[in-house]
Image (cartoon, rainbow, N blue to C red; front, side):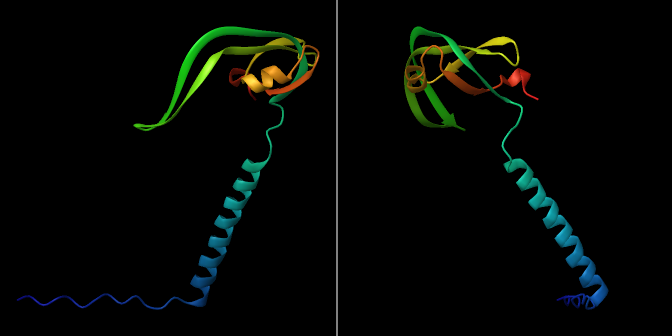
Length: 123
């Protein structure tokens, strides 16, 4: 039977190598912390605030199914599409904002509404 070769023994590291490893580890950790803090900041410039000009409801009953991978997570019945037409003076533009039923019912014409800019226009 052939004998196993002797294991390779790595010589111990010196202080210089250990110090370099610690400094590099701290720099990497600092970059990770910076990235997490930067991502946690609220989005600025993509929120718009305007005045509700009109409320519009389109009845079309539907069932929305949410799933993850191949598993169904849940279903949701909707009565239709709830839209608020919102005038944003700073943009000199009127937006059609789709909202959920509770928000639609709570807002009246003339109320203020803050919403996210449409994805196609986000900065």
